Length: 210
Image (cartoon, rainbow, N blue to C red):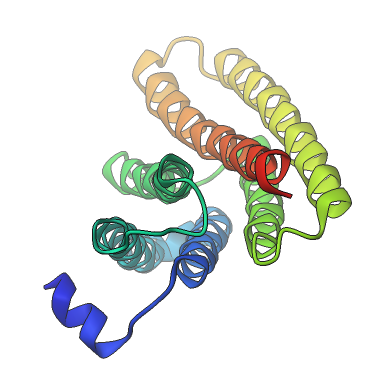
């Protein structure tokens, strides 16, 4: 299957990095829309699933390319970690969408909607950082973006704590409802955490090669 994909379009590593990061951003933006439009949650979840499958394809293509190339533009471990960690973001996003459907969530608390907005912003910065890998020349910009992703990760942690506090205060007797929403909050947090991991990987590449 992957041989056929490469015959149709022979992507290089940097193009795959960018397509993967762009796909991840598409997925998290759809999640943000889903949380503000839960009446159409099935449609949004389907779009997120399709995006997740496409990102899986890019990941497999990158590893296939690694096996076919003797010389690579970055260390093999760096390429593998970057692609799999990007994929982790959209995987957690997919989990969030699936849990939202499974638990029949009809309304999203304001703190959860703010968390998805933080996730979108962090992923947008990650996409820019990944694009800067071509040429490895925007060192100061990458450093600043990395610091901003770190700030957003802290903001995500704060919103998680605030959201769970509100949840426990509002539904102390409904343990099942609390557990369901807690899973959704934590899945969004994992996506934000993985954004920081990608930012750290890209920053490390710049430190090593720029």
